[in-house]
Length: 610
Ligand SMILES: [Ca+2]
Ligand SMILES: [Ca+2]
Ligand SMILES: [Ca+2]
Ligand SMILES: [Ca+2]
Image (cartoon, rainbow, N blue to C red; front, side, top):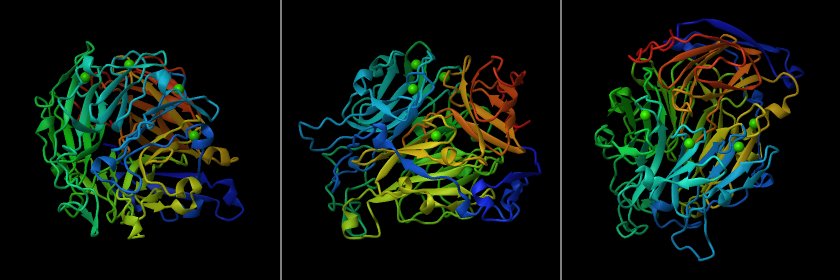
């Protein structure tokens, strides 16, 4: 556990406020995890959130609409869930490229050939569509993407889930990808509806394994038309049926044998024992801090799943006892998207999960004692009329505290024609971290990129222009994506917060470093992040870890716990740069201490912070 610490830090307000307010300095305090809710009053004002977003997708060359089902009407649930996006660097040039998944239409005209699209970052604010060159053209009902270098060859590979057959694309390292699904043993029997997925090295042997969720069993021949069944109405209006009333499916786990093939260990691992869930987004994080990666799955209309890694190749669903299966009223929620991160900087990874309209998102605060507390209401969240999807716990203004962005969009385009209070297209909701356990909604001041109405699903977070602030990529149903450029760094002349971005590369551990945990200390603040393979909604974020440092000019220490459990610490790393850290090698920047080798095997349950 984090030692209880008391610290006080001063920070200059942005220069623009100097003229407005006489009090140019404010103070905040964190008293460790037990009393982080009791920060000194004052804190941030809403009008001080110095971030706006500009949508530059069209100007950047990302302008093809993402086809996903009917526009005015959805006959079946397959048309409603949409798909994810990824920020990842497929050509290893240090600049994030963009992958946008695609659906299709039930009645497709011969002219229409909707496809997933890969856009290469031209490093000048524009992108080039390289889908065909990359061999990624494919028409179908794609759901999600997870990214990881499963064969440790230095090139990030892709796994995509589908209603139909999932696909593993091996990155050939020359700009092209090959579909190796069958060769690797990743084909499924018959038609299944793959939903979330995540690469995860659950046995810590250095080879990425693969978890794949399934949403439900769907067959157009067996599902009634809108209004033709009990679960085919919403607010009295006939809509597509489900998910309630449709048969559930089980999830999959594939073990990477390290010889270029995977073994289906869904049964032997206990993963398939979890039944009766409509599983959606999957993410891996070490929630109990024992050094072994766990898997959390946001589930729709049913309790969510926390697969605890038993360290022997098996998993047990502990969501119920851990308090992250239901909300605090014991109700199952519509779990769509999720973000993991340490919102209150107490050293413990928390969960934020998005939900259906007229519900509130859930913020599960990690107690560090094996369970989570539902902190949604105490953190300031409330019901919204929007269906909420992709989300991230992301520090947009580099102050060292994670803010939240949520993309929204209703699933029933039929409804807004009758009930205007449930618009099909919604805004991106933005919440500023008040640094006292609470969030403040700042959507209205965030600019057109945030307010333009869209029916969004997946979104990904990453610094595509390498300028030091986190940007956002958003999938929209039957419209072009949004590429929201964060204007924070550009617009702050002097007085802006510092940052540090870390790209981790495993050598003995999996090369993508998925599951690596970083504890960064700077200016009295302790921040914890882990490298993930999927989060938000069905999407993949920039796997480089981005830390805001406030007014501090350097990180005092960066402790890395690699996925195999070994630790390294780097001291005194200057701010405002992107640093690549290779496992086991002396750092190019700063000084490195010898790690506490071998402390990971037995897990050090609950002692991850000395
Ligand atoms: Ca690139
Ligand atoms: Ca690879
Ligand atoms: Ca493995
Ligand atoms: Ca940026």
